[in-house]
Image (tube, rainbow, N blue to C red; front, side, top):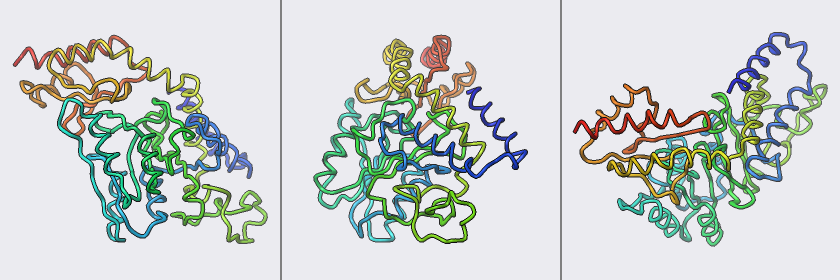
Amino acid sequence: MKKVEKAGIAGLKQKRNPAKISGEDFFKESDQLRKIFSQLIVNDEPNRVVIVPSASYGLANVTQNIPFKDGEILLAQAQFPSNVYPWLRLKDKGFSVKVISPADSTNRGESWNEKIIESICNTTRVVAISHVHWSDGTLFQLKKIREKLDEVGGLLIIDGTQSIGALPFSIKEIRPDALICAGYKWLLGPYSIGLAYYGSAFDNGKPLEENWINRMASDDFTRLINYQEDYREQALRYEVGEHSNFILVPMLHQAIKQLLKWSPENIQEYTRALMSDAIDEMKELGYTIEEEAWRASHLFGVRLPENVEQSALQQSLKKHRVSVSLRGDAIRISPNVYNDEMDVRKLLKAMKEPIFAS
C-alpha cells in the first residue's frame, strides 16, 4: 500500500541521521507492532508475539524446541516447503513424519479434514498445518484438530502466511502452540519480516540466536556488559537479532493498522461477493472448485476440465494480463480488496477462451 511505502521511506530517512535514533526507539515500535498484531489474531499476551525474518525462521525456533523425544509429526500433503523441511530434519532425531493426502473426490475438503483428525493418535506429537492450503485454499478445521490433539497431548503448529490478515483468526478460540506468519502476503507488509506467536509450551526453549536485545534489562544501554543469563519474558527470547529494524517494522505496522480498519471479516465477505457469480460460471464451464464451506474466499484453487491444456490456459491468462499462480495441480486465484468487477471479467474471459477453442 502507499502508506506502507511511505513508512519505509520515512524509515530510510531516519537511518540517514542515526543521531536522531534513541535507545527507546529500539523497543517502542516493535512493542507497538506486537500489540497491534495481537489485536488482529485476538491474543491477550503481546509478549508471546515476536518479530522474525521469515516463516522458516519462526518454524526453526519451534522444531528446535519440541518438548518430545520421539513420535509422529502429521503434515497435510503438498504444504509450502517452509512448513515441511524443518519437520523432515526431525527424522534424524527419531521422529517420523506422516503426510495426509486428500481423497480424490467431490467432497475433497471435508474428507481431507476427516482423514487428518482420524490420523491423530497417541503417538502424534505435532500437527503442523496451515489455516488454508497454500495451493487451493482448502480450509482446515483447526478447532477440531486442536480438540483431538488435546486428547493425546499433541501440539498444533500453524503456518498462517496464506491467511492471517484476510481470514479471521483467534488465538483464544483455536489455542495454537505456535502461529508463524510471513509479513509479505496477506499482511500486506514488506519482504524479510514476519511475526510469530509462541505459546507456553515454548516458554523455556533455546532460541536460534543469542542476541543482546532478547536478554533481561537490555533496555538499559549503560549496563549491557552486565551479562544476563535470563531472557526477556514469555516468547521474547525468540526474536531475530536487530528486530528493531527501523524500515521494515514501521512498514508492517502501517499495513496491520489498515487491516484492522478493513477487518479480515470484511475482506472475506468482499472477496466472496466479488467472486461468487464468477465461480458459478467457471463451474458451468467444467472447471472444478471446492464447495464454499471447505475453502477460503480470498484464496481458492481451480482445477482444469479434461479438454483444457494447462499451457493453453496459461497463454490465455498472460494474453489478458491476468495474474494467477500455478500451484500443484490447481490454478490458484487470490482476490483481495484491490480487485474489482473489471478484473473478474478479464479472468472469466481468459478462462473461457481455451474452452471455446477446444
